[in-house]
Image 1 (cartoon, rainbow, N blue to C red):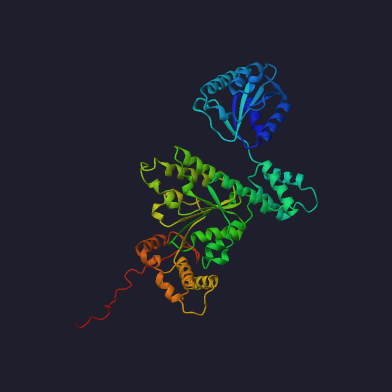
Image 2: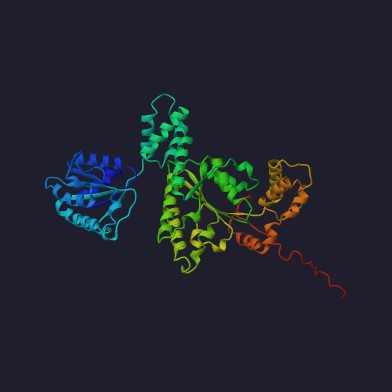
Length: 497
């Protein structure tokens, strides 16, 4: 629903206090002004720079730029002929004063009888407790896909400047989440640089949103699926789900995957390579950066980070070692005052309700610390287990890292029973660093299957029958080696002893 339609409903329903959350004040005021012209309503605006303006003309005395004086002056502008809409720009900055809050509350209550509607226009919703029950909040929606296309067409007017077909759809995909002004700047900059509108410039401007927030980090890497040995089923599953067109039916939107596995099996590397493979930016959510020192600040940071991720769509959102961030949800909340539980609630709500094309990849090393509500069906498209690589996978990983570190490929490779891909890379890197054969460099590598044998075996047993197999597809099945070292004695024939 358009902002003007929403405001029109509220005015006719006699709401006298409306809070509009918007980053585009000029566009919001333009929409409301058009509504007032159509309905023959009167419109007044106030900001601390221009003071009170009615029908484009400044009214009031020299004190009208003072917020308290402006609120009191609004009484004289009311008229019985038509409703009056008063827009207060960035008025949240002045609601820390008890006098201003009381004056505004009095005018809002009086506005029912004088047909005066007070509209606070602000980029954030910060309503004092005294005014919470008086205001209704409205969100000014960002431009739609069609509106962004119109903006691009108005700026890129020469032949060949604006692409068509699938290339245009890619540009619009990249532009989703931008404001109208940001879209104008992105198109203009792209034309100056490339003489054509390209998505790369748009992504560059959108990445600035991440730097300003400090909550998300944009990963820029060159490794695609060719840099990963194995995981064939996981690669095919994610790539196919992301490359399916879903614009016509958002219900088919892919959700993401939860990657469970032994440390060093390539969970983080896969998440980063998926973005490069599918042409999407990979956003890394730093859980530590979300933690705030003030009450409620952490939850606000989580909501803000998820809003930015939605604005960056289509994108990959990567959360590493999710169980550590949510480990407090299993306790009573006394250690962290329930912050982890509230963070989980915010994340679950977003996973259920978000409509943006954001693909969530979360990794986990210890499933026992994960809250069960996060792993139920429809939270993720699948829970995938990354096991220790098999012989074929290891050979491909060895070949990859021997070439990367420029080692002799004909030399004898060490015994790699129980090794992960990270340990193979470590061996190759040490061989290149110390100028040693692989067999000697391997003496400095102790695999995680040896240092944490019990936890690795416990993890593999839990995943058996519960998770998808990242390499072979289908349900993961683990054959335990417990008891294999005991000598089997046949009882078919009794011994003489």
